[in-house]
Image (cartoon, rainbow, N blue to C red; front, side, top):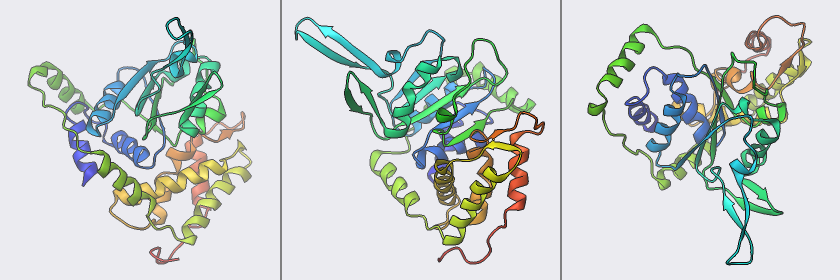
Length: 309
């Protein structure tokens, strides 16, 4: 299976992040963007770079800083004295895989430069629209423990991320494996590309063709609606969130080797898809993940044969 080969290749550089690698590939085959949350030094950049190598796509990295401006990302027009006119110089956003490191260190104005790109796969500069390469995926990282010199992502920006995946510290055994790997870097294996463009397009088509019964569609709808009716929630899941949950459920079914979606494909990914999208009342002390689990317990799970409508 493609994912097993991918995990094996990425594992040559990245130790102990199998769940995050799965989330990364899941977002990719569903043609979405992913937000990685974790403290610095947990191989987020290495993961993104190795992932792009494995799937044979070009990679760009942007380091988020407060003085970064939109043109540093999307590019801008400069005057060409030979042409006697302005000439557009593309920015680093013109890549297949764009890593935005510490996105919450960028000012809101600069963060907003990503919104059109993430939704429309294009950027507008000087009154002209430029299409981005396809496929296009943003992998953004943020540090959850720093509060100085950071700008919380606005709701509109967060809603563009299909998945939020948390990266935690490695186990003691995994830490030792990392040290061993780094101690013998001259012996490390080469990364092999496991996907070509044709195979990639076939995977996208297979995911799109996964069957979703009406009962599953109603189940997704009920989960989304319940987030809006819960008294602890001041901002429930949007319609876009429901669509993203549907896409992720289809991608999960593909990774599980099924041609149809079952309720577990939805349940297993609700926290990843919705936790960064809903806003709790300031008086609520429990975490958003706890609220979502409670909502899942209250929504009736459909039963039956989901291979057919």
